[in-house]
Length: 365
Image (cartoon, rainbow, N blue to C red; front, side, top):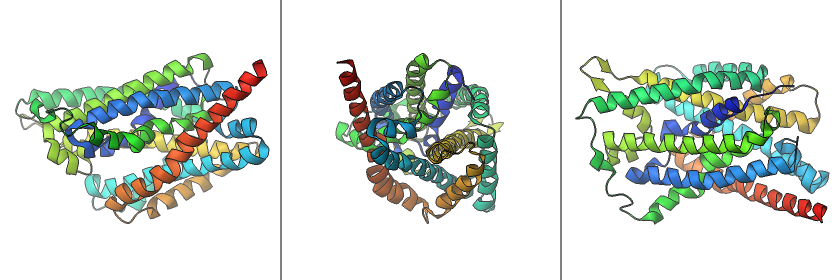
């Protein structure tokens, strides 16, 4: 049986929560106050993490798809449990769609996205085939590299004193907290932090289960700080107007680096950020979907499930939206948040937590 350490869990959690938010910039439509929306989302996200880890502790040794039959019985719990592998496949397809619009717009405008996405999905399938332990080891190696690159990027931007203007983030909350709250609920707290529910498929594999809550909360808080600093950096360098209107503001930020006409357009930083975090997020989603289907169908191995799931994810991602505006505003705001994320990531787990607490109280009495 595969086992992972707490550091590996920490690394995977951070890479997953950063995910594709590093591509589009978390709550960028909030402008200079995006960092406030991030910190508020992180604060609420810690409560969501606590609730999910509590659910894991109330169902010891069981994965996410086993919590529902365990608490609500086979006839009610099993159909609900089946919703989550499909949710994970849909969310993985959304990441594929992110890359579909990112690649031709920024990195390789003359290369067909399908060609690169097939290679990308093949690498994901290869990683999932070798198991979550291998993915966690790779994440433990790459997370420090992400931090080093981010620190280097920050230093290079601030070495040029004409590059930034700290007054760009003022006035703080100038348009009121009502605007900020629109980006906190529901998108902000579900986009990175509500999705932590998928780790219910991984937590039973952690060596020291008593430290899962502490590790996951630390990763969540650091993720929020990382994203907040990244957004503040983008605003002080580019200004609020460009930050709000750009589809990929943090990628555009990297193109602003110019040091003595020697270090310029360090797009390679963006490539590393985007593809590393996207790789781990989609790999975790596919692993969670594959393992969930394996447990629900009671198969001995999940290896025959990997390829069909990857093909389905690729198809969903390629057909999800016709253009980037439809992808961001149409699919995301009209379908994903109200009809998938809120019920499946917040409402149903909350009801399950209440049920588990009541049953535990009755058992003690």
